[in-house]
Image (cartoon, rainbow, N blue to C red; front, side):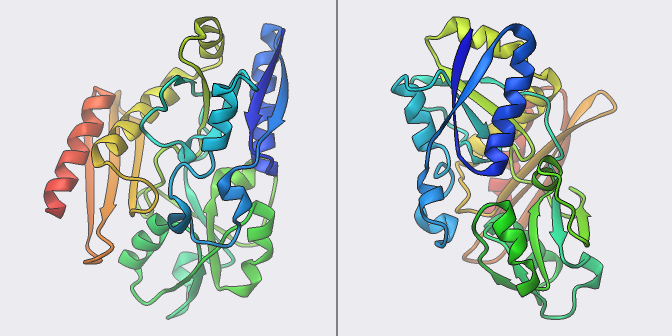
Length: 287
């Protein structure tokens, strides 16, 4: 059986599609990639929040599935808005990779006063500013290799650890930022597979390569984001882990106007309820 997977054309996106294909191959499924160019790919210079925020890397890919040009979509889950598109569902979340952020070029403790940091993420800027108000920030866009090539122009750049690992890239200085220091973006490190809501047979098939623990943690994070009502134009973060049989959710919300930042850290057993409670607490703190 052959299925067509809609994907971005970046090396990381193609790696993810190849990885999904390797999971489906033992089930007798052959995957053919359908490369789709998104708004985020077409504009490589503007800040993400200025050209549409979260969703700019997925809309055209989702449309390819809705138009039945592809059977399913392969997304970096951090790019997928928390609210579903009518006609599509998040059918599967394979085992999650490393969700953490990294500094490339200099360790956090070694950054000089007034250091120049490059990142296109308002989440990363807000959390680093809370740690080091002296830092200066610069926009950084492009695929992983393009961003790494620009690292020498700054004291450090901020990236996702999983991208370096999946592409087998090894910069000379990489400082991994634990969630206690930098809370990752919702869904970071995870891959999401979307298909048509009505395609029950495909949904059941894709569920066979899902990692249930990863899905549970992702559900907590995405429920948090739904309740916040945020996209990547706002400084917001959420990261869930299993600890001693329970779910721990660390969350962050920033106010760009007042520059105030708020954190929440709680433990629970129900993923969705935990996400909702965390969002409620942060919104109350902000207001």
